[in-house]
Image 1 (cartoon, rainbow, N blue to C red):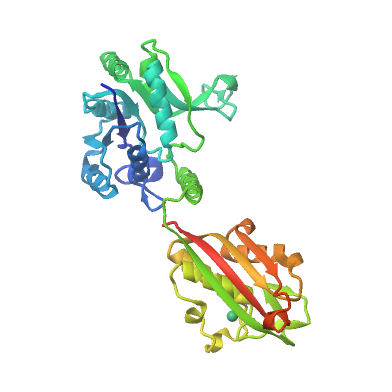
Image 2 (tube, rainbow, N blue to C red; image 1 turned 30 degrees about the horizontal axis):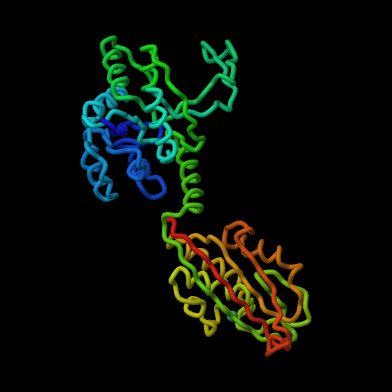
Length: 394
Ligand code: MG
């Protein structure tokens, strides 16, 4: 016996999320919350099997979810009990004989990591019982009547416990038997083990391993997922390239990246001829597989006569958002003999980032000269090259 079974109770009602049929099925970043939890356990090599516990009427949905996600480790889908403790007991009854370690994890903690799961399993193998926890950051007061404070607890000794709560199988089975024999109910699995006098090891969890209980928790969970996805994408990423050039002529204002640059010449074109934004638009549309600037904003259409290109970029941002693309970064090279653009680069980055709803740090602008060669070198025109990277979020 050397295997590890994970019991995932996912039969909570989710009253505070107004979730019909259980909070584990509430959408989070476009999928049921439970999908995130299951995928992490599937990908954690320390876990051999999963016993998933859901409400009776959710069994068909759970089966479909497991099948659609390709979760091969689910050994049993178990009907939950009246309380969480009952649900875990039902899961415990279905753990395979080969498993000597049992990790219990709430379906509604979708941001757990493989590292945290593995750490509790390794600690449970050594110490018998180990749970994920983090030091409490708020000062905790006690109050008997909810009106007057009766005490201030010593924060240095306080930990907020999470899941996984992981045990040697013999220990958790004994704890459940004893609790039911005595009619004892606890709010977590470790407390049942503690009442047997067995010490439980704390393992460092994560402040991001939150339990999603309220609508606000869902907002936090979405934000954390988005951050981790950008850093560590499982979604598709694509690059796009854009190029544009415009003549420099008198009696035109010069716009670069949506910023008006003081200069005696301006760029000639149907719109404001912002060569930098035009290159960026083509890079973005190219990465999204959405054609080019001419297809979306034809220069034969009077609607675009003298339009500010920043307005066109804003529309492109809308096209990207509708199709689930998010900008990872932009790298832009503007080729011009004059004027020098170095002093304007911060304003251009801010302008582009502002229109796209990204951070200025995601936009890089470089100025180059053409060394006096060709029409650009002679100061008759400007050229711009742009590369964009996008990530598919939804
Ligand atoms: Mg153009």
